[in-house]
Image (cartoon, rainbow, N blue to C red):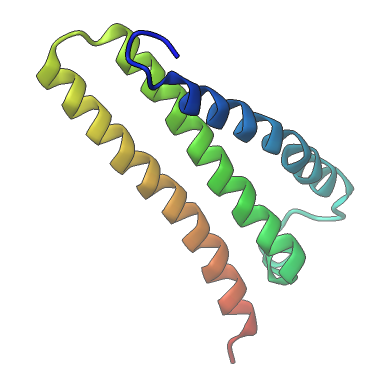
Length: 117
């Protein structure tokens, strides 16, 4: 567990999110490569399909979480001043939540916009 007695959970979360990203990334890559068109209308229709919209949102959520876990390790290892470390960790958490939330909101906006009048 290391000297802080806290690293095992973080280590496992990072590994599990990495493993989850493998099939999600393959799905995304295959979907892009097999798409006949990547214009706005085609992408909007793709996200409007419930299964594809769900997998896209899940991919972005797992990607944001995995990125957060990785950047936290960098800050914890290389930022030594307590105040700077705390500020950096808070900024990372807020930025990753903001980025992940914005990405999922964009998918929902495309999907709801497709279902609207």
